[in-house]
Length: 343
Image (cartoon, rainbow, N blue to C red; front, side, top):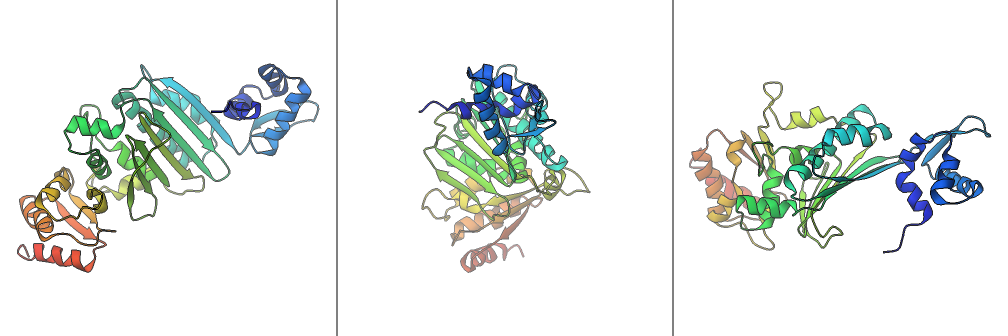
């Protein structure tokens, strides 16, 4: 891998540099790079032209401040790391965000860093935040065992892809004494784009997309877990509005509703036909009062699969309301056949 250029090295720290050295940035960069003040001024002009810094005051004694582009990166040892301190001290002061976007960024940052601390089994976590004129992007990457391998091993699941499917439902945690299992679920719904990459698998959720996606990939992060989060600076979404989508607020604030992408229940080219597949699929449905089953991209299901979910399971769990959506004609026929005896 080629070494970063001098300018790239400046970009990596420019937001913090300009806050720490608003009046002596030229001298600071001359010392940092071992160049003349004239050369340092050349780099400062480029940083200014590209939006990394802003200039005010007289030309002879300028005062610099962060521009519309911001970048912060930190590598932390996981031992003893307090995620809220890292956010408040190292990231929040250097970003310029509307209050609703800042609250969402704070939620995503602290939840994902805390997951690395409590679950990754790693030694360090790298956090990177980049703000431009349109969006904020946050990456949290640890060097642990990988989230899908962790869940698979802890819960004794037969396949890592099922770990991802369970994660998409919400209320999944390998340590219920510390976590509710809601962090990844709600965080993924707050951001415009959310992606987890680990163990050769990639899960992503896009706002307004009817589907979550599971891909098998050879990523740039061979070890551990990498989480990517992006949100528009103009977003009007609030953390409260996202929580309200999946609760019965204002009646209560319990996480009572989930949306399950049925296509993630399929492994490869297999069809959803058997009762054993259905039993694998309905695990932990009883933790919710409303389960919306999104059949987008599922062309057909077997009679036994539908019967196990909509008749057998529904009869045994009357407190769980199962609501199918986006069904093809074939899937709807199987659903109607299963619910007819109950009706």
